[in-house]
Image 1 (cartoon, one colour):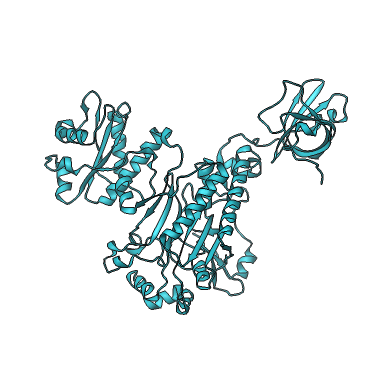
Image 2 (cartoon, rainbow, N blue to C red):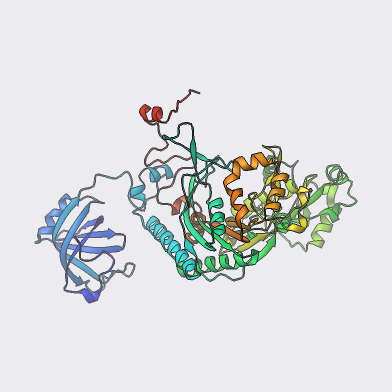
Length: 579
């Protein structure tokens, strides 16, 4: 070993030891007769002292920041009053006798800890990863992964690898396809999830499986999505909903406690999907902001205000929410901004009033009676603002108001976003309407067990034995009990409009396994990237991934995706067509 110690382990008890340290030159300070180097590695930082009469003193002239050096010297206590309580090695320093330059660094485009634009950080990720922040996040990710593995190992789960090169099953997002050179015209797909393989493992008798696994989705990217991501994949046999949720709660609470010393209240709250949509306008609510959606229909039963009257006469709804203490922010201009935002979200506009020395509103002339009834019924206080909207589509109304609620919360009430709001959303609808495909599709996947009492030809009434774990408004995990009976699976395929021939073509190998004994089973998958980012206090998952891609799927470090050699394309019998 080139080094005898790391830069984070020497203490006062090591005084007098001859040591060798290796690391990066973080800072150089020249005080004339003595020079100091702050030497850094991933374990910490040590102050190096170069006296004017030492061989090491002259070597400092050649050094640049972020050069890599080997320092030989003797440990001594720092003079009284010069200790640094902010670092682990703050009681000591190493008096250098020799410095060997292992690698001299050119001037860097930025230095660790600086905050240039994200594009620069991703292009030079190896520099960015040297920063305290990124080092802390990557180490935290490792610790969380280890805690997860230890937890499942103690419960008798086996970590079993599943294939990366598999068959395309066109459900959900688009697959990344991999052409086969040995089977021209045939393609593998990279897995969006190990879903079918982990269910087959249950059929194989491995009743407790988990895997920390890489998954791939070729979907239209968003700012905080990655084409490749990591999930904690879990499956169990002979279980029902509560069993999976209990094991999951144990894992999540242990991860928070052992990685960050945070105790979560267990069991987590359970909220039915319909309640989440009615109260928060989303299936992944962040309750920390309050401002639950309310049905204001009671105040408009006899209204003559034409816009709302027409909506109610057509069977529509009037809903909204109270924004506490928002009156000082709520000007006519702000009201117009919010109205335009509601139009962008698909509604006709927004009605509002505030209690500011009485009721104030651009609509007061037409709706004073209705406003007073809301203010009294909802126990509004001076300074509160009430936002109201109406629409014939209640789902659209809930979603638009839920989006507005969250945007106002993040912009004006960020101080409330403290701690961790952890809950389960349960009792999901089995089907949802796809505008793109103009048909009902499975909300989760077509292997989810329906609640049998709801299973019929009315798509809107079928419920799924599915559950999502939500933390601070982010879906961190999702799972379900799976179908283990062929007759139920065939019924679901029938409702999805899949013929027996189509089902065989897409899932034949899986359905074949159904003939040979399938245990009741269920599972869940957690997004590791998101879970780590929440615990780390980062808003973007890119901050907890060593080598992430940009929002449009580009790796700025390597330049991927990139063109490939024409010879490779010929071997794969692929031709690139222009435009």
